[in-house]
Length: 129
Image 1 (cartoon, rainbow, N blue to C red):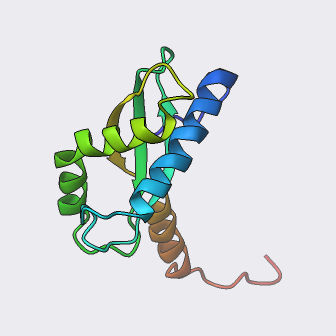
Image 2: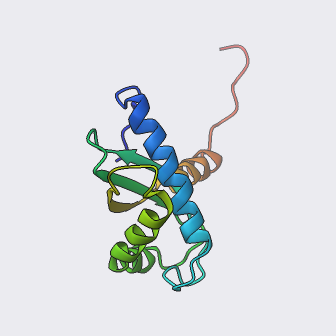
C-alpha cells in the first residue's frame, strides 16, 4: 500500500520523483519496443528512497485487461526501461535509480467503493421519529 504521508519526503526526493515520473511517462508514451502491448497506462506516482537509489513506480492500468501480464512484461524489460531513463536524465542526476514497479490500485479501489455506495439500499428517513 502506498504511503499517504508525503511530508516525510524531502524536497529533493519530491523533485527527483517528479522528474522520474515525467520521463518514465514519456518513455512509456513512446513505447517503441512493444513492452506495453498497446495498453494505455499512466505513471500514477513515484516514491524515491532517501538516498535516491530506488524508485517505487506506481502504474495505473485502468482499461487494461491483463494487468498482471503487463506488469510482468514491464518487469522483464526493467533494465531497458532504466537504460532509457538514464539516457534522458543522466546529465541531470548522479544516480539512475533502480526501478520497482507496482500496480496502482487507488483508482480501482475508489471505483469499487463508489459502486458499493451506489448500490446500497438505504431506506428513506421517516418523519416524526
